[in-house]
Length: 362
Image 1 (cartoon, one colour):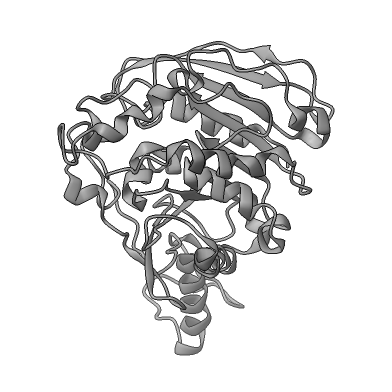
Image 2 (image 1 turned 45 degrees about the horizontal axis):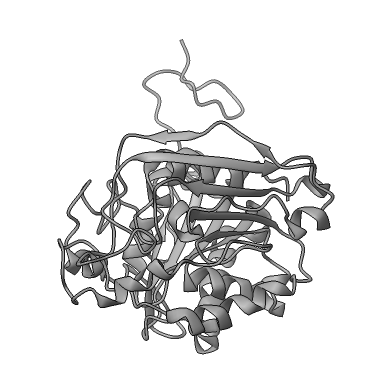
């Protein structure tokens, strides 16, 4: 019988290996271990369950205002960086920058659209930043660019299959502005707008959307960041930018609550689908959720309004897609029936949005 390590001649059992034979063996072993070790991003050790994660309901306000466990080194500002704990160097992933709405926080956004729950299954790397003023503006662009650059540098550009912007409310409107800037225009493969404006016509926002402003601050159960009511004039100014289509090429998915549309159907027309030569819109299978989302706006439930949003609960979402788009782009609309602006997305509709996002070829 011979030892499994062979160098020039068989090494018999009981015969010690010479030092000059051990060195390359140890080096090879270290290299193999390094290749197999999970990757750590942004100096953040991956945890299961993810850090600062809400329970299924009644997430305390002190938790949803957390700023994150990663630090952007150039600005010193915190953010969340979630990724699969078994991520390997050289693995292909989808990178998502997820922006909260006005008056909100990164951890509220992280649970409003809980991509973190699907990071491992769908190989997602998700950065969720925070605006110190709780309203995104051009002064935040450097911080956001630095986060994107950090992730690209650590993963390697060739390992990022696609880069998506996701934004809720004013975060969606900010995404619309960012895709028109040079930095993001050359990188972004898709934009998912969560009640943050549609590239195309939508019914007017109902007056009941704004009645939530009468709610007493802090009213209702704990579990959400205080989200400001923007008022009709503010929303009109913000949505005006949607009338002129961006010049960049990217996939676009729009999600909204039925009550935000004034209970009117979302129009068939989509200039963005026309741009990419997509087919006529088709109604895919509805998504039915029996489980509620994590968060809501607890500060405006007395009296509150259907359009602004009530308590989290299950529900049904209608899914519409414009098929056969040029270059494998995805253009789609999702309407959550019976929902408003601030109820956190349920698990199955969240997963459906992830699947749509991943189905884009570019």
